[in-house]
Image (tube, rainbow, N blue to C red; front, side, top):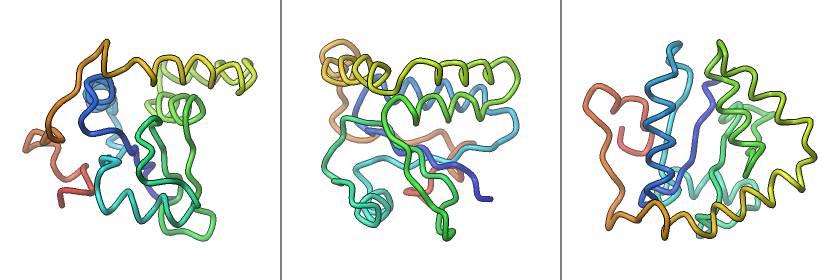
Length: 139
């Protein structure tokens, strides 16, 4: 099994906060990252029939380049990535008891308003040198 890859909107303030949150808590160095604006992410999304221009969801790629590769989106992606942090964060798996359509409605509400509430950058932010190898679109 390969490391899960978090595909995030690189110019979104909320998405960048999520990545910083994950970097601080991923004690097992399990997660990898790439911005949705990158060619790396675009190739994966196209392979799965997803629109690479749709920046309204965080995606998590499971089993990258394996026969069972898949892409999780919206609330399912968030629950999966937080659960992967281990420890107390595994409690996030309990979020799956809420039906996905209801979880995704809340997710979409936040996604529609994220730039207004959390800001937007002109360009994708560069990772700190100590984390650079975790960002597959900058390697």
